[in-house]
Image 1 (spheres, one colour):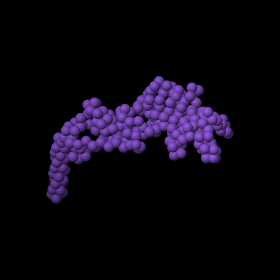
Image 2 (cartoon, helix red, strand yellow; image 1 turned 90 degrees about the vertical axis):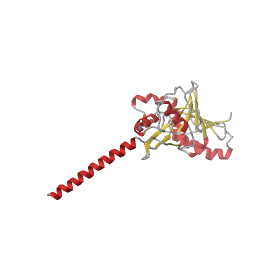
Image 3 (cartoon, helix red, strand yellow; image 1 turned 180 degrees about the vertical axis):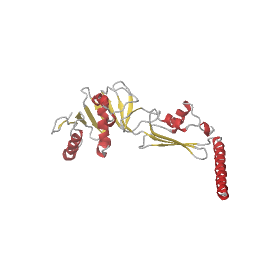
Image 4 (cartoon, helix red, strand yellow; image 1 turned 45 degrees about the vertical axis):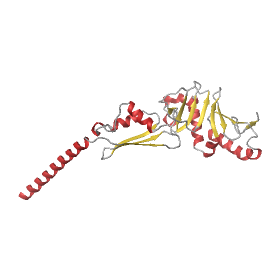
Length: 265
């Protein structure tokens, strides 16, 4: 019986000591000042819309001071939530190591297309169909869409089909939805990515494509049967233009079913 009491007493002393030690370590740790802040921005392509200077300036403007502040006063969750307000941020992680150094990892959104609407506004749509403003630092090398695009810039707009609900069905009738849909198709194909440089919405709200090679205008029409149209166009390039030459036709019309109409200007 005495042996059991001694064992229990030893355990109680040990646990109490650990609690006291942990409390001391926590108190000491909370008094440490943050000496270093490291920021890493991941770019999926060489489009640097967001810089380290932009991030630190944004945090400073919003009253965030990390370096030389006591770590007890630094709210990592608040900083992380704040970073998501930067329109170019896809993902943000903020963490602290045992020495009190802070690390910030950001994944930048990947621009898919740059839009110039009919109101002289310019902005990007990313790979997930979300709009983001044009950057004053850098112009991304992506497909350009212009012409009679009636959509104004809105930072909460998403035109990806998987994100649209029934109440958003009207978006599918807009020019912005059309240019995103066709740009997403072009981007996933190496041949068309190398070939197409501009999407134009004409006054009839039909799509025209402009090529990098051959100086051609492709009258695409709407986005219905899009895959079929691109396959038909690819066969035309391979079977006809390879023989006649890439400069032989200036206009290629895909609007008619089961045929391609070509002409010279």
